[in-house]
View 1 (cartoon, helix red, strand yellow):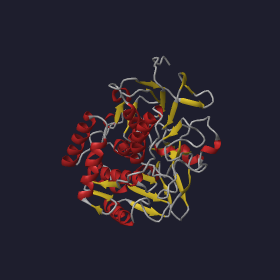
View 2 (view 1 turned 30 degrees about the vertical axis):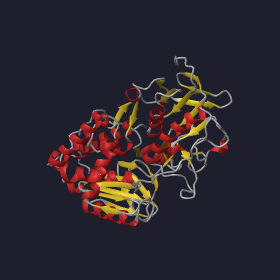
View 3 (view 1 turned 90 degrees about the vertical axis):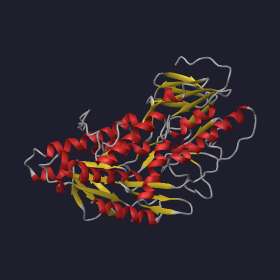
View 4 (view 1 turned 135 degrees about the vertical axis):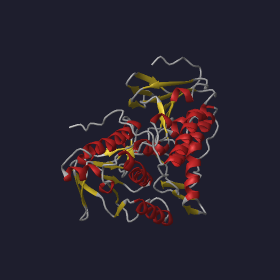
Length: 425
């Protein structure tokens, strides 16, 4: 790996997401050597992936080079690598570019899409956890319209113009709203010879309401906004089978669609090598204590979505969203410095700053601890919070310009099939 020699203890971080990046920042310019490993050379701002998939933003607006993040950090290096195995006895990590020893290891690998064992859904549906996957969805949406406008087969056209999103959490709700805005404001102008009313958007949610992690007020308002935009909302409905065209559910609802976007859940993305008992079977998350130490290990830690820290307030672990990952990363950096200096570590206490989701133009819902609101002001708050949370001044400027342009002109400029999507057989 050609890692520079150092007299300081080495902290290896696996994953450049919210947790890993904030940990690296917290450790910057201290008496430790930090090695950040990731299979991509960029950090992805995942809350805005859905805007890439619906032509609202280009991918470089929500991605930021990891090397640029750490460029002013002394004793910090980045290596582009895929981690394959952790040898805790040797204190060594095996990667696609070689092995690396560590004094402290932090796993911040996040999650991957959970298909709940349904292999056919996994094969034919479209996940949206990564930038390439978001670009695939963008290409597929536009390709479907290009095919629909030339086909003479009405059944084929119907399947091409039916867009089904599975999962009514924040990702599914935001994606459904964004596709609906494409239908209402943009695609009629791009395809004037197409009957846009034949385009249908369906949102399927297994619970009895959308946005189940949020308040009932937020769920009710979100559903109202979706229905107003023309989205067909189906609660208490889950997918049993999908063959690339026919969707079978647990109800009488059957749909023909060539585009099923899967936003129905995630599971942890652990690394092989640690004892099996440190993983929760159902969620694939590492069991950690209040200091984010993995159970049974002194110098191994897990952060963010991959960490399961049970507390009185969160008996099933903290929510798998950005804020716990950011806060855990910041605190663990300080705790590792304390540990290196033989000082006691401080326990993690999650500061819940609330949750929010946007459904479309002037439509959003916000849940704060003592205050819940929806509509234009919630939408403005959502935009401001996400804009400020983006990594890099350039990205903030570009996203702000795009949002302003889109708002004034009812337009999304990134309607480009740069890389045509082709489903693997």
